[in-house]
Amino acid sequence: MKNYLLIVLIAFAFLPVKAQELPKRTIVTTDGEIDDVDTFIRYLMYTNEFDTEGLVYSSSMWHWKGDGKGTKFTSEMEMTRNIYGKDLTDLRWPGTTWMQELLTEYGKVHSNLLLHDESYPSAEALLDLVKVGNIDFEGEMGQRTEGSKWIAEKLLDDDPREIFLQAWGGTNTIARALKSIEEDYSKKRNWKEIKAKVSKKAIIYTIMDQDATYKKYIGPNWPEIRVFYNANQFWCFAYPWKMVVPKSQQPYLEGSFMGPNIINGHGSLFEKYYSYGDGQKQAGDPNHFEGDISKITKTERGSFSKYDFISEGDSPAFLHLVDVGLANYEDPSRGGWSGRFEQSAENQYRYEDGETASDLNPETGEMDTSYPQTRWIKAMQLDFAARADWALQSFEEANHAPEIKVEEGTNLTATAGEKLTLTPGYTDPDGHGVSFKVWNYAEAGDGAAEVTYDIEKEQATVQLPETAKSGEEYHVIVEGSDAGFPSLTRYQRVIITIK
Image 1 (cartoon, one colour):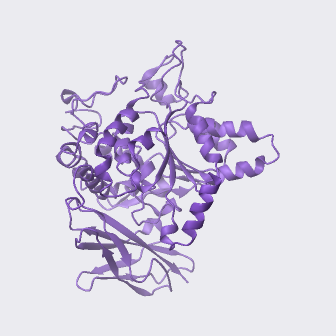
Image 2 (tube, rainbow, N blue to C red):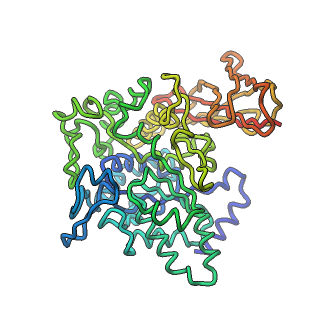
Image 3 (cartoon, helix red, strand yellow):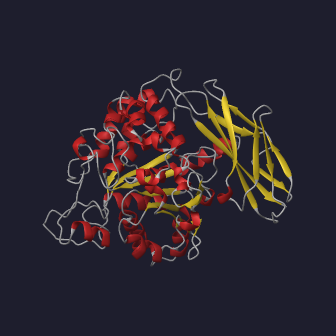
């Protein structure tokens, strides 16, 4: 392994800078809720964008298997206790075969996906990565499992790339992996170096606290592991989306869009995608009512129609790895398809959403804790629809995203009050034209600049404020959407630093 990695790194050293960018490594942990299933189907359509290195069943406050001995368990989480009560022997457990079943369906379309990108991994390769982690109880991390040992092995390996750990459920299997490393190495002479290596290597993207293991173990014992904590923004892509998403974005989540463009006519994998009124029922989950058309016309979340979006609350986690040109991977405060996060005042390695990471919602004129995620829904849904087409269509029939460029570059310096010109350009693999919008992302930077785009000149003008101070950054998003269908959007973020 060491020799292979050395050869790879040497080979990449002689390639152009862009080619040297190795794919991001990621491991998924999931509790298998119906929104995890839908997230997983979308995830499979984006596996060409990163290196999947583990698909691990885990538990959460919503789903756990039990130990098979009738042991009773009471949740540590108040919400779970209030909903489900105490002394349970299991809770809504969907089993440990659903990923394999979906990968079988993925295998049927894999050869067609390769027509669009040769980087798509085979179903067999992904099946080898499916592991069972800590699933017996919510927050259980007392035993080493196949899944926790796999995560620990990857965190300790010689590959220098970071490992992006996605917690679609609880963080308990990740916590068990870290605990195993601590148990095995904390008494050794090189513990300080090993802990620093793992802390630098791991990034955790967690959707809420779905058990108590981050607060009780990971946070106190591994404070230098970077954490992206999404507790607010994901709701616009989850069950209560009708209560959160602006009206202008809702059509892209409704059955009139989801049915024809994603769920139907795109093969058996997409037929497995859970939507309202689709007649499906997840085994092991008595709370899954959404497939019954008679029960969805009036719910506490709103009224729904057939094929309406239910939830993909965990998709923001993997979307952080998809490079659409927003340059937000290294600095999540910049915002992108995975949301926008601000550095915690208590821990510089923890990034959080919430009030401090709100964006101005133009439809309400108010700061909105969900809008950093909501603003991208149209583009994300059209992109997913294009990927669904890739499953069955040829390269010539389907649409592919353009690449956006800015002639002047993406990291500029200027003086307060200066006026700059930006010249967008593009290449499109399908030969489509691209239309541009150029806008100031004030919340991602240090303030608002005045941005106008002249369609005839195909240039944008950025007027920096006279009050701008040295060292401040102004973020301008160059957004290009092609003329294909579904129309696909990519970006370049221009960061202007005040001298």
